[in-house]
Length: 447
Image (cartoon, rainbow, N blue to C red; front, side, top):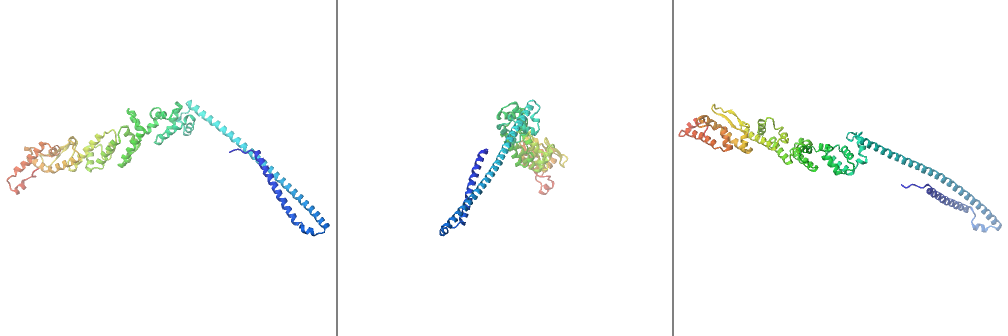
């Protein structure tokens, strides 16, 4: 705001006062003249008087009017003098106020200059302490960091924007690192500073703490993901976990472990589907089979096992497939084992029940549906087959669970021949006999 010139103000005040005084005096004179006129005789009345009387009246009137005019003039002059005295007093007060304002302004300017000097002195002292190694930014208190960050050599709009972008995605501790970079490389641009923040081991600890998967890739000699790809991969992981309702696995540590082991989103989806859909949400017998075949696992931790990148997806799928095959056998009350099914008694002294191992069935490419159909067929034929084997097996060979599985899953010719031999022998033993006798002596019929 422009300053007011006291002299200009005084001149304007004087002119206004004089103008106001003249107008007031003139108005007062006119009022009193009108009053005097009102008490004087009318001209027609004076004309009717004798000349001598009229002359005396006129003389008295003139004297009265002159006295009235003098009184009015004297009163007006006195009023004008009072107004002038008041103007002079007001102007003196104004000049004093202006003088006081000038004094305050000068004092404020002096204080501002002193503040700037002290601020510069503080900045110089802080910078000197940093240069001398007395203050290390990374070890400084937060208030001190704020002060350092405001120093000219540590402030830059481009670096501030780049730092803010990294902070927005969770990178912490960048202010101190950025100060160290600016100290070593004065005038560095934002692009070069970001490269140091990400790839230089002297400065990239805060960055790698946030993008820990890149640290693992770097340690293994693999190329790190750019920020955009890294964040997009995290988002894809989160979507998979959320869709399966297993948000407990959706966190940065899990993401970093997956990224660091180069597990793509597609592979993760396969892992989760294998464990969740086929085991956790699968048949109860599949869970039982998993516990029996792999005691170190159960349906509760199969998901964590499947998400561990150390465990390769094919190996996970193979174990789940084994549990599914074993579960199909358990559904038919058949025992299971990886190498071979445990040997079991059958109720016949000369017949023992044993079966193929799950690994052998996997080698034949048996999947869940084939396992269900095959074990259902085995369970259907096994009671009669074991009875006939007890009767004729010593001479013709047995057809037990293992042979039934070989025929069902492998279409093995020798297994078919063994089954037919027992069936034909049973037929021959009772051919030509009455139906009653056959029913009474038959132990199971044909298989």
